[in-house]
Length: 344
Image 1 (cartoon, rainbow, N blue to C red):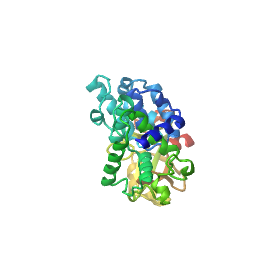
Image 2: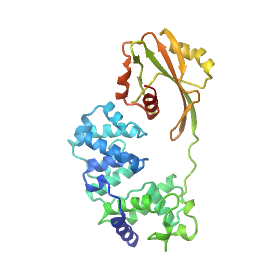
Image 3: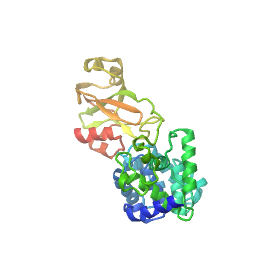
Image 4: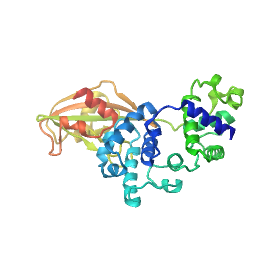
């Protein structure tokens, strides 16, 4: 109880003012939590404001098209979050007539909502004593209690959840959860935490053992995969180009991109390659220009994309070709967005 009291007192004095902290409406809490997953507050805040303005209610979000949602999400990354957000909004309208489920168990049924998000909504919106465990919480608890169990192991996930649940203030679950997350974000930071002025510096095991920089422990990440993408940027005489919508379960599902060929090629080899000739066989080509001589490396969590853009001038394109100025209205990966902004 002493730990929770200390945290809550610290939080009430030091918390940052955020728009989602001015409400307990589960729709707004849910939006903020989904947007802030794997995203810094500074980056996520503008998106939160855009979403609440464009879709002030869960009904507005449910009634939007997936393209509208993904266009608004553009640049935030991890696009499955945006798709799941849209799917869950429609589910809430269909199954609950637009009223948010108010229990941890029911919240878990929403697409894209896991233990952390369900706990956050349940505690903040419905005052349920369900402890949140995110990266900040792992860091705070591992350091204070000197826990060396890897946080991304099955054992570690269970151990930290159990500990957080034992520590939560059942009378103030919302304040406790927000307090421990905020404490990890601005006090017990990953690098150079403010240990000298920490409210736990007399009891923190990691500080006493000089192991602050060693905790939390995390198992090694999956090996990064390197992929080489050759984008074909067609331009017709009447000012049109081609975009294709990505399908399947891979990266950028539902987003648009230029026609692409995967593989690493030198300039001459690519222009003469069977893949290139097959992809361009139906067009009368006037000119092929390599936009970037050195591949642009776009880093994702488990993939590094080495990308080259080829501008191909042709006589004409199929009927489904897009007027070039209109491409800015399509939801595209940030990699494609940067090229479009720089080139067109």
